[in-house]
Amino acid sequence: MTFEEFAEYAETFARQHGEVGTLSVRHLQRLAAGPRKDGRPVRVLPSTARLLEAIFHTSIEDLLGRPDLRRAQRDSHPLRVVIAVVVKGSEVLLVRRRSEPADRAWQFPAGMVKPGATPEVVAVRETLGETGVHCAVRNELGSRLHPITNVLCDYVLCDYVAGHAENADEFENVDVRWVGRDELERLIPADQIYRPVLDALELSAV
Image (cartoon, rainbow, N blue to C red; front, side):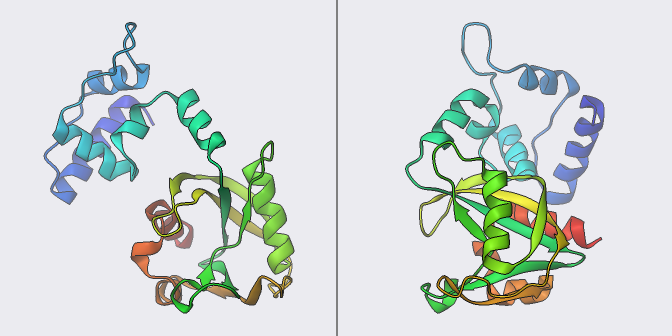
């Protein structure tokens, strides 16, 4: 997507969502260039910041921060897991955790990312180990501190490759299931699901 195309998209998004912020092509180019030579960040009006946050579902600080610093902060977090959002057509793969309370029992397959490990590799390995499903990572969906557990979570969108979904880890889980979007939000409240995950599932179902 070019700067011109994104500026047009942002204008449409703002109109549809009642945002008052604006983005010119010149401003986008300055933002993409990163901090000024003296190290100061590019100035962003509050209304424009709110527009960008609404589009990307993340804070303006993360959007404009130095990628190397964000990566260092992420890698240094004491507890980090990767969440595998595995899709097959219009369905997504869930596991039911044995040790979690009822309102948080249903989750996406996940695994701890140990120092030196690659989240994408962990996501594929843990999905197979928990569910018997082979998958391939399509793309990253983002990272956040989980609002309930405060664990740093990396989210990756994965495509189903092969295998029959079954409870392959009875110590951790009591059930494994493919579910549609409607059932997903009955099992996991929508306000607990990372917004980019919901957006990705909507696109995958088209």
